[in-house]
Structure formats: C-alpha cells, structure tokens
Length: 154
Length: 436
Image 1 (cartoon, rainbow over the protein chains, first blue to last red):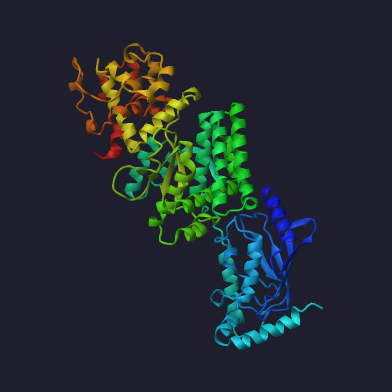
Image 2: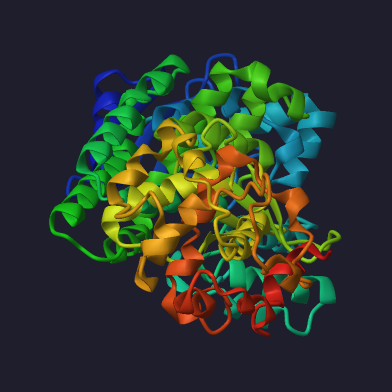
C-alpha cells in the first residue's frame, strides 16, 4: 500500500542523509511504523551533549494521520510531558493541523529545534513554561542537570 | 497522581488529558464516505417540519434534482464531492480517449506541485491513487459497466479516498500559490498561510475560495462545469444556484448541494442512454449557463406550449443554431420537422427544435387564447442561442416522472394538442420555484 511505500522512502532518505544531530533506525526491522530516533541536544542549549532517545510512531493511517513523537529519555522541557510517556506536543502534529505532505525529517528537525527554542506559550508542562519565562537561569540549570543525569551516553 | 510533588499535578494531568482528548477528537459521523445515489425526497423529508423556507426549497429541489448522493460530513465532504463528481462525470461520458486525456492532464499538473516545492517522493502516492481510479474508470468503460459502483467502492476505501483528496488538495494549493493575484484579495491570512493551514491539511473543510480554486485549477481543465446550489434561509422558493465555472458553459456539470458546512452531490433527472451522452452534456452546460436551474425546467414548459402552436416552428431557425448543434443532428432522425413527423417516442429529440423564440407569432389558428394559465415566462426565455437547452431537458426522458410532470401525456397525444395547458397536472411545481 502507498503508506508503506512512502514510509520506506522517507526512512531511506533519513538514513542516507540524516539531518544534523539526528539518527534514525527501525525499532524492529519487521515493522516500518515504529522508529527509534537518537537526537543530540542542540549546541548552546541546556541539552547540549545529551543524547535523547525519541520514539516516532506512525499510525496505520499515515500520512493522513500525524505521527506521534515521544521522548523515551527523561527531559526537562516545557513542551514535553514530564512523565513516563514524554509526549511532545507539536502544533504540526495535531490531527487537524497535520499535512500529509509534511516530511518526517522536517518533523524531527522541528522537534530538535524545539529543544533549542522551547515554546512556552504552547506548553504541556505549565510549571516549567512559567519557570522558563520568569527564571530562565534556574530552568537551564535543571534542564542541564537532567540532561547530565538521564541523557549522557554511558 | 504521578507527580505528587507538583501542587498542580491533578489539574495538569487533567488538562493534559483533556487536551489529548480534544486533539484526538474525531466526530463520530455515521454512514459511508460516499453514499449510493438516493432520492432527493429524503432531503425534503428532513426539512418537512423545519423552517418553511427550507421545506419549500427542498421540495422544489426534489423535483428539479431528483437524485442526490450524500457525502460523509467528516471535514472532507466538499473535496470528496468534487473529486467523486469529477470521476463520475468522466465515467458517464464513456469515452476512453477522454479518460486518457484527463489522466495525462492531471499528471501534467505534477509540474505545479514541483514548482511550489512539493517533493515527489512525498506526493507520488497521492498521484498513484488518483491514477488508479483513472485506470479503474477505463476498465469499467471497457467492461461496459452500467453504473458507478466501482467508484463508490473506490471512494469508500479510506486510504484511496484520503489519497485522492490529498492529491486534489495539493493541486489546488499549488494552483493558488502560483496564481496568488486571483485569490489573495478574498483571503484574510496571507495566501501561503491559508494554503498551508486550510488547503493542505487533512480534514479542513473547503471554503468558497478553496472551492473556486479547486474548480479553476483542477476541474475546469476537464471542461466540466461546477455548480453549487445553496440551500439556506435566503428569500425565494428554490435553492440559489451559483456557477463556479463560467468558462465551461458547454461541459458536463458537477452539481453540489451546499447546506451550511456541508456539501453533497445533486443530479438532475437521468440523462438519456449512453450514446446520447454528449448531447446531454451540451444541454446541461446550456442550462447552467448563468441561468438558474429552475429556469431550465421552466423554459421546458414554455416550450411545451410553444410546441403546441402549429407552425410556430420555423425550420430556418434550426439552421441558425450553428455549430454547437451539430452533434445533435446525427441522432435526430427528423430534424427538419419533428413536430409533424415524430411519433411520440421521439419526443426526446423534438424539444431541440423548439428554440423558444416566439418571434413573429405565426398564424396561430386558435390555440394561443387557450393558454390563460401560461406562466409569465416569455421575459425569462433564453435567447435563441440557448435554444438547445429546451430540447434535451432530461425531464422528458424520465418516464416515471410523467405522473408529476405534465409534459409527457399531452405530448403523447399530439404536439398540436393545446389542451395540455388545462391539464391540472400541468400547473404545478415548475412555476413554483420562481415564486412569481
């Protein structure tokens, strides 16, 4: 079916010419719909030097339904839920804003960009967003601490 | 509470849960994506107890457009109605060459997609789905399939349906981005943003601007017209028609019924047999040439009575019809004087000659005075060049309508029979929509 054809192409491109700081592989070679993404924390952000494992799940209705992006690695960020799910809330990933012509590499780049520049007004973690706006220094401290604790390669 | 240290944990969780529910909300709309054709009376029934305006308009609609096809209201109904209508119209022409031409044309629109920066590896699966439906259409024509069941099936497949609609959306978006001067003035957001948020998304319903662009950029090249019939509370006894494709007056027409927030497809009475299809399309086009649909029906009646006037028909006028008529003559057994020679069953052809123009009222022996109830139509008669619209009014060809439409029986007896104006069936419906 068309979905798989498209996913295979996108995966091939992401594997052969990956965007900066992003590495992609299938979680299970037999399943095109579950991806493991290794994302380096962007330079200059409190996530620098961290390596984050991100799960990208494609629904069976892809590309007519959006993928979901979640952080398996714990991360302190206003736009990523501070729980075991680590769901990332991206406008472009909402069902009614999703465009089937969007590219997964663009989604991942956008996700990484979000690490560099959080969007506190579109936050899922209100408390972190507030801190980001009012006490950025403290936010950066904690984020860096968490990065060191959870996202530093062994 | 997964995070007891957080004072707001509960409300945060709740908020997240609601946000998630909200994001994932999909209205549970029953029914297939595309329904089989069904009687428009169902629509009239829906509104029977509603606002009288709606009741009046929908009952009139059930006469002028006896069949309808319901689109699922999932946010794509307008797109789906046009895409389905496009393929159905194409299929109804039963012209393999034309299907091939359309396939080539649609594929050539890929260059538009490329020009606006869409990437082929992302859009090709949508084009594939569209091509597949073209292929199915060709196969159906070759196999002599009688109805459009294959299309209904294709469009009820979630993947196919989404893919074709996405393809149509992308073509529309590309067209708009390449012709911003035609649309920007009608949009409040910048056009690029509009396309990105309203056209290219998965389930944003089409609006007027998007629909116009879809017609301009994708449909019109097929030579098909698109007409919307607005069912709203506006004044009048009939739905308000709006022609979106003034440049295609001669093509087959896709008719959409618009009710606020929703589109369905409408059909005028059944077209005649396949081999006459081109003619009918011609006629449809004439009907929709800026003239409201009800006038199409109206002018038929007018002609019905004109036809009853002996000698009114001036054969010379037929020659004056010019080129557009040529396809007709090939099927018209007796174009010269159909009134006199045509047996009743030839009525399909006869209306054609009745180019409404009353011109010099010919030596009317007696009949005219007998038409007191003749409606006020003369002023609204189409001019001569629109004559053919009368000829092929498909109402004539719908046998089972004869009980409600007065046209058949009087004609059956004789075209000279003026008595039919006094037929009490005659009076009706036809004149109502205009409310004169």
